[in-house]
Amino acid sequence: MTRDIVNRILRNGRGMILAYDHGFEHGPVDFDEKSVDPGWVMEIADNGNFTAVACQKGIASYYYDPSRHRVPLILKLNGKTSFHKEEEPISLQNCDVDEAISLGAIGVGYTIYVGSEHEQTMIQEFSKVEREAHEKGLVVVGWMYPRGKHVPNDIDHDVLAYSARLALELNCDAVKIKYTGDVESFKWVVKSAGKAKVFVVGGPRTEMALQLVDTAQQIIEAGAVGFAIGRNMWQAKDPLEASKQIADIVFKT
Image (cartoon, rainbow, N blue to C red):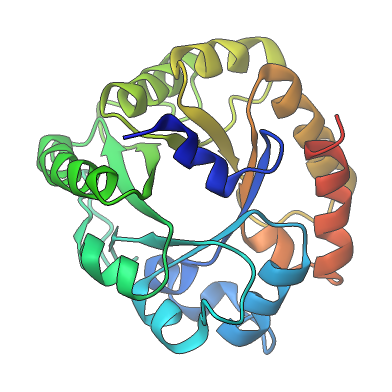
């Protein structure tokens, strides 16, 4: 396995992933008449400065054409619905590495709810995914989300640093994780991830575009490689302009 495979989702060492797994995780509640159409979102991914798009297998099967779309595909291999409000969440595999490859993916993603009573089940399943994916030359991205009664604050810098470290220990090429809210504390999160690349989750839609630009500046200063962002792109009034504003920070800072 060569570590330069992660460059397939980066541009000059930085990256922007367009996340579109929300329909699985939240249902259509996040969508409007435009964003409910995966084809429309794939066009944003192709034309909006993104270095990868992340989605579930059904979206990829129907709407991602590797011969036409320029943006690389990261296939999300597990997920859960929002109907289950359990305090200790679990998310299990619904797609395997070979199917991801057949759909044109150059990378796979997997969520681990760090701190959940079920984390060991997810870790065990992920470990098999990681080994096979790397054997077959795919980038491996860990969605590391602290959850459960043992996690009173999911943006605490020590909790996020532990989560980032777990991604490194599990041999992830990159980790998708929340932001602590300030540069100095997030530097420790990035340092804890070692050589695994850190992407910050875009989070819920905000009407304050300047706030998102400011956050982009902060996470790059802290050492992250970029954003993994969804709603703040395809819910924006002008998604391509919104992506350009963020790209200007991520790729030029």
